[in-house]
Image (cartoon, rainbow, N blue to C red):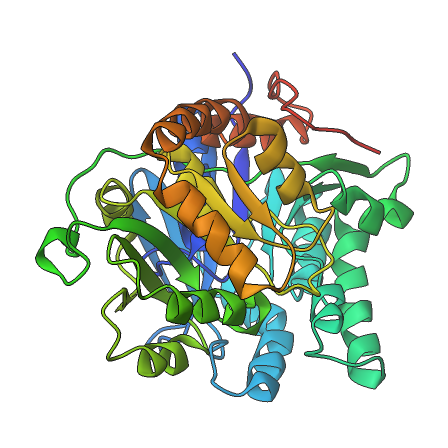
Length: 410
């Protein structure tokens, strides 16, 4: 029996938010409880009537501390709020019942990249081990896709990111290739490892979206869930949707949010083969995906940092073959092709991408075989319990998780 650990899980996202990060952190916290540990989730809140509140969900304590809102429409305002975030959170943690807590393990989720100073202060007070769950290599990906140029702002973000790498005893990246981006931070006292994205497959309890009652009824449904922003590079897929209207048996469903959501919804408002729906509660995702046939993943073609999106993990866990448009040579491409769970495209031709859509739409037997392989891959690679065990092992407690497919360390 391992010694129970008191673990702080720090993130900007947790239910009732519906982001993939919120779902992942909730799954992780519940599995830590099942393993006999005591996780406390620490998240910012825009509440104004109290500096902190404490609640319990599924056996997990959640400390919500007042902080500036980080979801401003303006990128500049958001950046300023996020830079102030660790300091405002620390001040309000000091006002909470956890002001003098001696943590065993401090775990934080990035993005954002700004938690370094907060973790440093908490570590200094408790001597805890630290684990960085690194999901995005920022600001590199923003530079790749043209959202940022080299200059003072880029340099500032590089320094901020360096702080969180410096205070981490272990850095868990989501793919093997990401290890190269953080390899310069390898030290005898710092471990670099692959921590795959994770998700607990939940039972189908229904969904507010009933496709059979919409204009997409009876079609082979290609579904996209999650964020729709510049980084996703959805324009080519949208061109395919406009081009493939002659196929009355194929439909597209987009469920989520993002800076480009309203633009795409307005563009296709009168089209019969596509629907857009605002994001739904995580509990409804199983009920949504069971109505669909293929999951869509798309990343901006200049997005060079390797990424295994949360939506991909959802599709795999619930047995949906994947159609992905990504940069050539990425770990996601290799994973899909080597596991034979879908099709990958890295070009820019509407005709070629349409051809892949039709190949999957016209081959139900192929989709069925891919579905079985998806579920097996989900059990092997994307287990929430395995992620929890791996993180706990970084504190020198527990037996840790068995090595996952493709896992390596520096």
